[in-house]
Image (cartoon, rainbow over all chains, first blue to last red; front, side):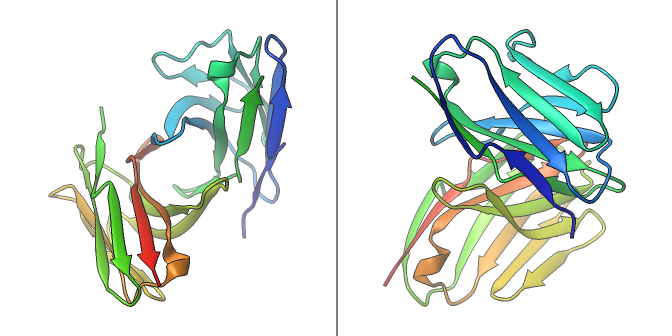
Length: 114
Length: 109
């Protein structure tokens, strides 16, 4: 079946540095990818929607200059958290949509900013 | 804006009981609804996907129903086991997935 690979699974970075999270669709072309964030004891919240070859659409309250999303190919989207701070520590998860309405999820990335 | 509500927020049951988790959503114009399981420190596991034209889906001890017109879905777990302990999330999809806050389930031996 379709697989979405997300990397890294766990990352610890120093405050003020940037960290990149990759989301790859392994056996299908993902025209649309979604990035979500989940803080402890809260629901998953959509951060942005990215379509291959175009700028991402960010949800209200998400800083586009801080959370850079690149969807340069039909199999890869990246989320870069720039100048990370401890409050950015969270669970980030991507999902990808190919043909039809089926959504496939990556396994998620746990970010800890110290 | 789509709002998804899950009730109860937490549930503790003894092993062997049948249980029902509830999900409601405000905008019935959805393409599908999914139930996920989330274990601590892990990603999401998709349990059941119900297309908007379907009424229910079954997988093993799990049965999910969908009443799109009333904006409701239920996840029925039969003969619960300690290994079922996890957070269960409901999500509806139109242009993106909108998640509820989840139901934290604890099944005690």
